[in-house]
Amino acid sequence: MELSRNEKILLKRLIEKSGEDSLSNIMKDLSLSIVEIMNAASWLKMKGLLKIDERVNVEYYLTDEGKRYIEKGLPERIIFNYLVENGKKSIDDMVKIFGKNFVTIAIANLKGDGFEIENGNLVLKDKEKVEKRIREREEYLKDFKNIPGEMISYFLKRNIVEKKENVERFFRITENAKSIDKKDLEVRDEITQLKPEDIQTGAWKNKDLKRYDVQMFAPYPSMGRMHPLSEFIRKVRRIFLNMGFREIYGYYVVSAFWNMDALFIPQDHPARDMQDTFYVDRKFPLPDYYKTVKKVHENGNGISRGWKYSWQENLAISGLLRTHTTVNSIKYLYDHRDEVIRVFTVGRVFRRENMDSTHLPEFHQIEGIMVEPGSNFSMLLGTLSSFYRELGFDKIRFKPSYFPYTEPSVEIHVFKDKWIELGGAGVFRPEVTEPLGIKGKVLAWGLGLERLAMLYYGYNDIRDLYIADIDKLRSLPLL
Ligand code: PHE
Image (cartoon, rainbow, N blue to C red; front, side, top):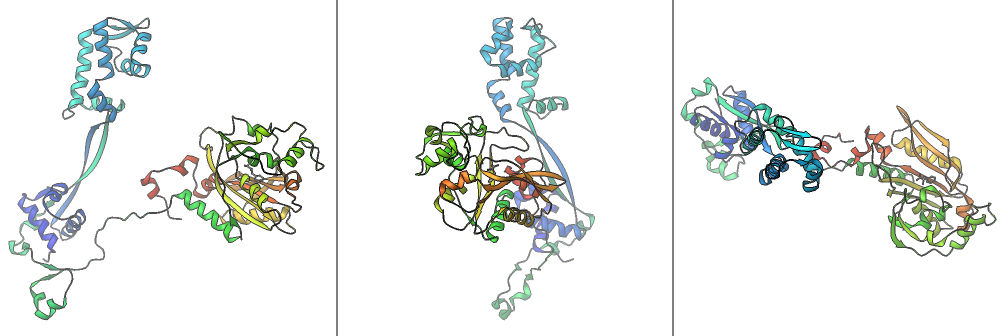
């Protein structure tokens, strides 16, 4: 039977060790890699010379908490010692001395069988018995070699010990292998690359040529790839770029003026509340046209009747973390008043939200504006429909809605199993555009990115988009 160099090495080694050994032992002795050994082993197995067994080894390790207990003592030990020295004590006193968490752990693991709570006091009924219970735990913790099953489950439950399973491979030679001639196991030089000299001198005749095997066992290479959220953002960008839009960027920290006032959001609007917006300790100068904005807020400045209140400069100059990317659009509009505009932003925004399966305090919006000769509301709906269609969402509907800065305003809903609201859009009101001297229609939208990404990837929890678990990420399909 023909055997490769590595097959011979492995077989020889196994015969020396009375026919059986584990992969990890073999790796220690032979200067072969795990891949080379597994390859050789699979071939020997196919040739009927070797059997491969897998055994799952369960091992127990101390957790960090466990290690801390070994060093400082179990909470129940510390409480016990204290009680032995000081007699019975009330739980309240103990909490003052040791902290609530600590006392709770101690009580939970000590109650009953000699240790009781009576009228809010911790009482040692049977000192020896309690001492014995604690000592038993301490001894098993030092050495889990002969630890009974229920004790291990107990430690696992307390998160003192953790379990690790590893698969150990064992190789055992077959009867056939035992009858192989020693001479056939002689390891000869193998040529992996045939050189001209080998051919010219005829040296190749005395050497073994290594065979190629395209079906050889090889570890699965895990390649670098983009995080799904980055991948999705890139996709969104590409769609708008392909539709002729240019990407614009902006700062996270902006003034309330740009984030709200310039958008005709009244200063008593609930979204401006400290409950909803993260303010920062910084003030910003106001742009030259703020006096017009003030007038528009107060009395409409001939455009409408305004909000009828006294506009405060000191509120407008406050810094905040942008609550929507519409701030990028309005600033861009201010800098490019007489131009044709097709721009978009994909960016982070910040709102004081509690985190749950559909909310994050930090998320992304897909924002954009369009200003063209003759631009109108149906162009807006058409552009948004094309965008969603590019992502594979064909069923879209627009519902009348309200934003202080657009009229008409719509909400965009996309259908996937059910209708899901994904953003807002509209035509900027004259109260927003006229102070800038803009006469044409400014089409604007702001769409949620994470919710769309969830639909796209089929996630149910928004937090799944932010996982940094490398195994989970590797298991995602390449889209
Ligand atoms: N800024 C709005 C939001 O955050 C979305 C929007 C943008 C609506 C532009 C209309 C126009 O929900």
